[in-house]
Image (cartoon, rainbow, N blue to C red; front, side, top):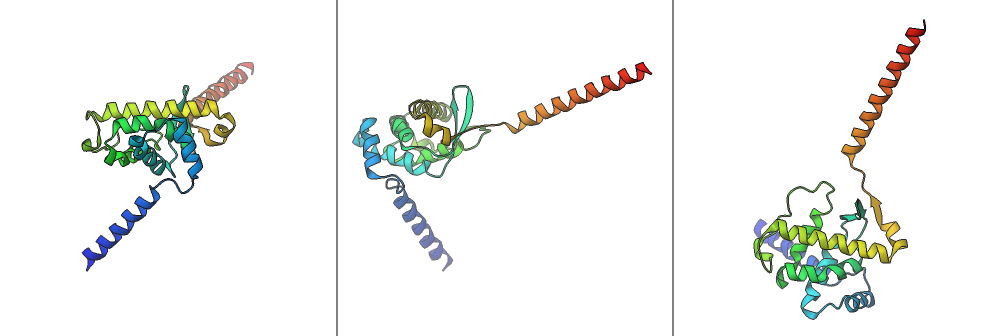
Length: 193
């Protein structure tokens, strides 16, 4: 009985995921066509484009804009259109959903290691670090292009990343300088008397 219920639950979840991956319910068909035309997305790359939109929805990745790390509140369709060729070259057509592992990994500010890709998902090569770097470079580059082309929209989407360790370090340094200044002031008062 429990196994049957578990199977039914898995089927419902799979059906929901496949329906949500069908083309971005929050993105209009016209917008999808416009972006597909702009980036000259081929029929063989459409699965990668849809996978990018589906897996990016609801995720807020950290991207490099120049030398700054920024939190991208949501991934615009334009960025997915720009990344489509890289995704299609990286993953097999039936395994483009593996891009979701990468985009989930980019939502962590302190990224360690590489996403846990299945080696069978790669179209060519199996070096996870190289593939991670290729996808990161593509995401950062496409984000930069989007920001340059849409400055007003980018202002609402991007938030500078503040490293908590750096904030603690700066607070400790300020506290130390304040203590040294107070010690000098106390020493000066004692020497006057």
